[in-house]
Structure formats: structure tokens, C-alpha cells
Amino acid sequence: MPLLELKDVHARYGPIRALHGVSLTVDEGEVVSLLGANGAGKTTTLRSISSMTRTTGEITFDGRRIARRSPEFAARRGIAHVPEGRGLFPELTVWENLRMGAVAPGRGKAFDQEAKRVAGYFPWIDRRRDQPAATLSGGEQQMLALGRALISHPRLLMLDEPSLGLAPTVVRELFATVRKLNEEDGLTVLVVEQNATIALDIAARAYVLEVGKVAVEGTSDELRRHEGVRKSYLGY
Amino acid sequence: MAIPARPALPALDVSPALRTLILGLGGLVGSIALLLLIGLVLTQTEETFTWSGYWQQVVSGLAQGAIFASLALALVLIYRATDILNFAQGEMATFTTYVAWSLMNHMSYWPAFALALVFAFIFGAAIERTIIRPVEHRPEIVVVIVTIGLLIALNGLVAWIWNPEVKAFDSPFPNRTTEIGGVVVAIQDLGVLAVTLVTVVVLWAFFRFTTLGLVMRAVANSQDASRLLGVRVGWMLALGWGLAAVLGAIAGMMAAPSVFLDPNMMLIILIYSFAAAVLGGIDSPVGAIVGGLVLGVLINLLGTYVDFIGGELRLPAALVVLLIVLLIRPQGLFGHKVVRRV
Image (cartoon, rainbow over all chains, first blue to last red; front, side, top):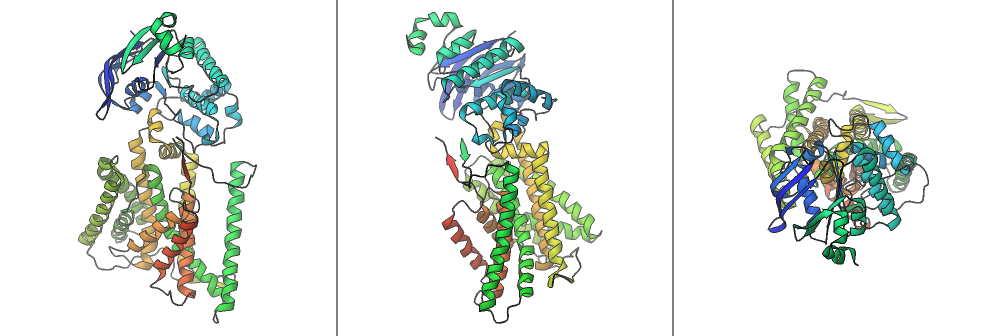
């Protein structure tokens, strides 16, 4: 049984339909990418999983139905969603942002220990704990958002365009960390990414969304060989 | 994401806590210097001026200002959490003060005070859950009208339950004066200042040091991000309304001994408090407190020393000062200029 399963999910923002029946699965311990152009429905798919948009269709997580509940419900079930724009609290300090990863009941009980683990991935966090998050660079903000998501030991990590607006070296470092987390801790990841090269690099499998539907799916190797994907998203 | 720009300060390359301390002390010294300067000017212009009389007016202005500050803080608390200007904040305080008055017929002052605060908390939280929640995501004008409706409803309810006659309200402080360094001050004024100080410190410690306080600050920063971390935002907002109602109740019970208990007792105080909150920068708790104190002292000095202003023109005079400050500094004294990154 997959950890996460979407069956024929439709979503709309007011009168505008954003998803037209998306079905996908993510298995435990897997890294899965969602590719697609702007407006294809990648972000909406993640938002549907977190009940941040109105949906129809079925979404199950760990065998339980989670569709049309609430973002806090999904979070408490073990889904860590790092949204577009990173979802940090700009006026709170680095350390306070990190602590917010552990406030939901039953999650992240041993904060000090977890914080130490996260600071192991991003050593600068500990040195700059009292700085307001708004004063961090884009890359640091993304790392802090990732670190905060890890505090609660999520069962599924969802990243929305983590590379957006970041320098290539920062992107490489970020994805290397995600890969390490997957390989060493078996972290399950669903990542939305416009940069198909990076996305296929890190994921074992991927889905390509086009106008609110899954157009192509397969392993990363299959997609790299797929002519349409190569031409439209990889550019060769 | 709207990121508030950091205020442009001289590059103080020290820890944030130390910087706050330096700025705070600087502000305090600056205020005292300014008050001395105003006093010096008055020695030249006023024939009957005495320094002890002057400081007496300053202290009584601070006590009045403390009441504005409490209510302004309540307004800021709710504004930061929900972007709502709660026009009913004053009437909520009036209602609770009447409840306290009823309680005081059965018990002594401080137990009644404490019970009234508990009532205020539940009352505020209940109003959020039942009346504000349904319109929370509607356009601002709808929410404003709902809070104005609540103002009128509570005003009528108070008159209906307790009858509109003016009532005397006990003060916990003796109705005497004492002398500090040659200045005669009312113990009542000192008591009001002390209660406000304790309230502000407790509130600050709650937000600064408790996990619940942290979560409430996070919700004020971003509701969506909080929900994605598993926070039940709705309950946090109700909690915020409860705390704001407690602040309002303190303001009401501190004001009642001098303005007496009547259904409209908080109307003027609410206007001053709005002015104080805007003066400080509507999103700044420190600003609300400083704004309240400044306004309190200012209207007292204006009313005492500027002949044509007297008692009646205090409110317009205060609003003129507010207007001037906002023309020079639109975000208020301590407010953030909101810069939107596109």
C-alpha cells in the first residue's frame, strides 16, 4: 500500500478549475518529483493534499482519508509541507521558527535533541539563532524551512519549488541534503520542481503535469528518455 | 510575502537584546529631557508655574495614559492577529467593568477584580468564536460593521441589565496623596501605573517565554504557515481576543473610579486609545504603550497650560498632534513600513 495516494483529485479556486483528475502515489522511503510548466497544477496538488484548496476525489495517507480536512490535520498526521515562499515567520527569530516545527501536540517531543540534529545539517542555524528570519538570504530561508520541517520527523516531506530564486550552488547543497536524508533516514519526499534536470536527478520516479492532469509518469530514467519530456522540459 | 522592513537604525552592531536596552534607555532619557525642556519654556511663559505642580500634571497624565495604553494594547493585539480594528473593544471593557461592579457587591475588591478578568477572557474568546468567526474572511468593511454593531449592542445591553444611571465604582487605592521628592502625587495615579506596569510585564513574559506565546506570535505573522505546522489557528485567535478583553477590562476597572460607571464611560477613552495605537504604529505593542503614555501626558499638559484648550478642546488637540505625527511618519512612531516583495 502506498504511503500517499491521490485518486481522481479535482480542485478549483472559485470558478477556476486547477486540477482535472490527478492520480498519483508515493511509496514509503521514495523521492517523487512533480514536474510541469507554470500553472500546470503542481502547487495545487500539494495544496490539495494539505486541504488548502477545495477538492473532490480521494486522498489517502497511511491508509486514512485526509481529503477536505484541514492543513493542521494533515500536519498532525505527519505531513510536513514547505509551501511556496517557504512559510517562515519573518518577524520571529531563526530559533523561534525552528521551535514552531515542534509545537503541534504529539510531535517533536525532544526539541533540543531534534534541533541539534537539524543544526548538524545546517551548522549556521545555531550560530545565528537570534536573528529574525526576514534578514536571512533566500537560500538560508529555504534551509531553515527545510530544517523546521525535519524537526517533527515527518512521514512525508512536501517541498514546493525549493530551488526558486536560489543560486545554483545553494540549490545543489539543498538537494544534496534532501538526498542524504532520504538515503540515511529513509525520508519520503514529494517535491514540486520546475527545474526538470534537478528534479529527475533526485527522484526515483516523477509525474509530469499538464493543464491540471498527469500527462506522463514513470521512473526518472524513463522520463529522461521520453521524447516529449526531453524536448519540453529538459531542453535537448 | 509581505516582509516588514527593519527600521533604519544607526548600525548598532550588538545583540538584539542589548540594542533594545540601549534604545529603551535612550528613549527614556530623551523623554525626560523633553519634559524638562517643556517645563523650562513654561517657566518663562507661565506666571504661576511651579515645578512641583508641573510634575504632578505629568504623573497624572501618565496614569491616564496608562489606561489608554492598556486599551490600545488590546486593539493592537487583535489587529496584529487578525487585521481587524475592534471598535467594540471599549464596550467589551465597559460590560466587564459592570460585571466587576456586580461582583463587588458580594466580595471585596481584589477577588472581584480577578474574577472579572476571568470573565473578560471567556467573554472575549466567546465573542471571537461566535460573532467574529463567521465574518472573518469577509471584506474588512464587513468586519468593521460587525464590530460597530457589537459596540451598539453591548452599549444597549449594559443599560438594559444595569440601568443607565451613573454609578460610583470603588478604587482599590486610598484616595490620598503622597509626596515623592517634593512632588505631590495621588496614590490612585501611582496605583493605576503600577497595575498597568505589572500587566505589561506579565503579558510580555507570556509572549516572550512561553510556547503558547510563541505560537500566538507565529499566528500573527502568518496564519497559513502556522496551520501547515499543525497549529489550530482558530483557537489561537479566540485566545488573542480573550487576552485583549482582559487588557480592556483592566483599563475599564482602572478608569471607572475617576470617570464613574456609566454605559458610555469607555467611548472617549476608546477614541484616545485608537489615537494612541495609531500614534505608536498600529502593529506595534511597544508603540501602543508609548503612544498611550505620550498622549496621556500631552493632553494633560495642554489642558493645564494652554489657556484656550482647557478641558473641552483636549480631544481635538490630541487628534491634531496625531495628525502631525502621521504626516511626518505615516507608519507611526514604532510601526513597520510594510514593503511588499513581488
